[in-house]
Length: 146
Image (cartoon, rainbow, N blue to C red; front, side, top):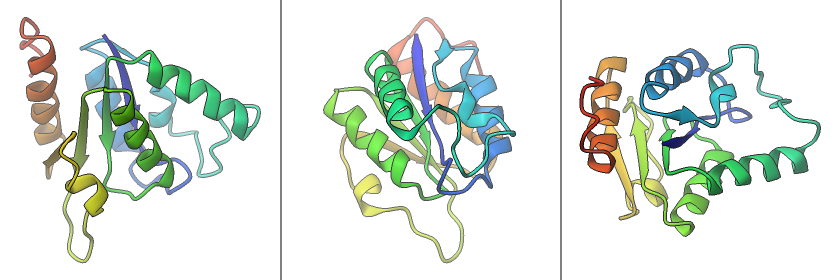
């Protein structure tokens, strides 16, 4: 299974370590096409390609070739929002993971979208459980990842 993981890059890298852990878990389910999102060396400059147009085409190719999209949406990101919209347009199953916190609300365009399964979580273990439940609906024989 090809998995497209989306997380904030230019919107802020405060959750980069969390992305790394989620990607490591997702790797047990299939190929994570966007492993670089969890790279602690990747900065807010998002300089993971020769130029912005190359990054766009690369990422859209990965999105087209993915079987599902899993996004961590706690840190607001225009790019992640774009990726979610594109995934929905392509008919990809989408899971959005969100850590609620005081004074911050998830965008209504994400939380209100019937094509996005939004799951709130407080710990990495809870995020892994949500991912397992989501991916198990796609691959019923693969429930031993929890």
